[in-house]
Length: 531
Ligand code: CA
Image (cartoon, rainbow, N blue to C red):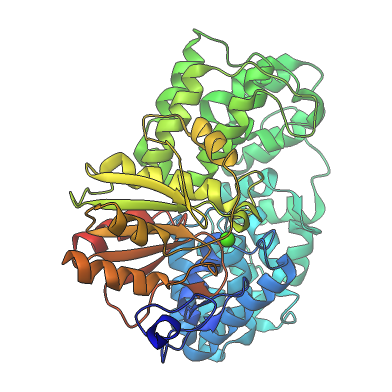
């Protein structure tokens, strides 16, 4: 009977598989540690905001920062390239982890790495607000040496004057920083007279804002911004918005309650701002049923290329949808009647934002870890978006394109769940939220498939890899499934937290780790399953 107690083919999850190199996870089970580069990706995409069910935000941040530092030390050039790629391609829901990692590289790397990091500043800090975030981070790591002064100076000098003027009025202050503060420390030589006017306005303001538009076209938006501060009527504000394309951030707060102001802003409202303000636009009557403005919004949300160009991440659409469909704000008293056309447009846009995902035609089991720990923490710090809700939304992207998909959920047992891409995302979120909690056994999907005669070419498991309950490890359960069915089934582990664990055996080429809510993940999963 000794084999009941010890077999390399079936090891209790509370013990490591023999000679596997497994490490204890936070739940008391054994899994593999991912390498620093995988951890870097997880941090860049998922962040550490809110921690996890098991680990505080502070501890998770420290762990991730240590992995980032290790990457910077091992190959600084590769680390900077990775940071820039994930940020520039819009693969992460938030840009803060990239800015934080870039700030680290600009301080902790060797000279070549530091230079590369600072040269990449405008590519990662693409807006004034992001520059302020970067400055807040960088001061934690280094002083204002010549390299940093020049890099920040170049951030201002290398933009066309008109673009610089736009950034200056749109983002005036953040994280304790203003453009004036930044310019005081930076070496910014204005490359043109037009730049000189913008920089002078930032640092000293204008003595006299005349009634006539500024003679220099590139700085006219600044003039309009100054005029708006002293506007006496809604009509005047609306005219400035329409004639000079003032962004909504440049409109004085006292006018932001006016429907006419929002109607004027709406046609040119950037997609990100549109998503953030849908509730407000509906509440104040700028969007009313049957109006052409609603059609315009629906058309814009249906434009895949525009979504990509604006780097609208699927999570931003998911967050906008769940908030908007609720019909009332989280804190304030804002209440609105959600427009069905807008909800449906957001639902479609979620799928569009992942780009084209090719179907493999393979038999795929999508398995959602819905155990208790998946209800702790948030994905990328989005309120209400727990890992298990995120997992359900993520699974739908693959389910929407694949013809042979079975979607299941598990904790320490299989949990009945009925979700389909035909459902609206907010219904899926609600259904997932209402599931009971349980312990975790990530081997369950494979064990279940074997017991029930389910043929699968691939298992895709959405999890935090905090598995501990089962009598057999997930990797062993997969091997047993392959042995008994003769199907060389693959396993994809979709990480829903930025912890350093995985149930995928790094020595098995048939198992892959991807990062949940990496906008590129569904296509990577498809490529791997299609071989
Ligand atoms: Ca769990």
